[in-house]
Image (tube, rainbow, N blue to C red; front, side):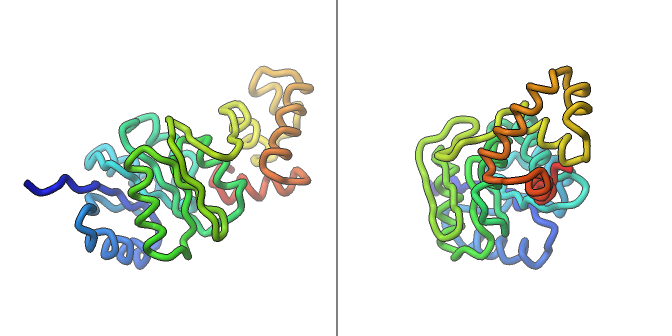
Length: 210
């Protein structure tokens, strides 16, 4: 009896990259691509139809940002493992995507063997976090990470700050005190290694949070 293959969804808005990943994955004896998507909304629809074991998700896609896509997939298809494939090698991005439910984070210019290792790791319940040329892995739960991650409230504050709201406006929208919002902002700066609000906005924009 043949061994069951890892079923994968590939979500990226670049057709050439999807084609390359499809060829790489389908060439493996233990994997096969069961669906492809060019944007976040399509990724969620395709995942609900194909029910992949692992969803390989780009952070920068149209229609639905990378973080929102991860959150939707985590909520609507909790059985799937989520692996982020991105050009961003800053640890801040890994922290945010893991807070959104990703089990792994791999850089786009990695060797093909690294991508395949990441897929196998997250499928078997481990985390795989690659930052620059290093990778860390270990046992994982719903939002695993060897790095500090953001809380759901911190993600909300980051999204609103990135959309141009003042601390007072964020406090009103989330029914919090201004002091509490300022505390969340300070924690965001610390966790994401940012020095200014502008840097926080830049990180949020790259993650599709704006």
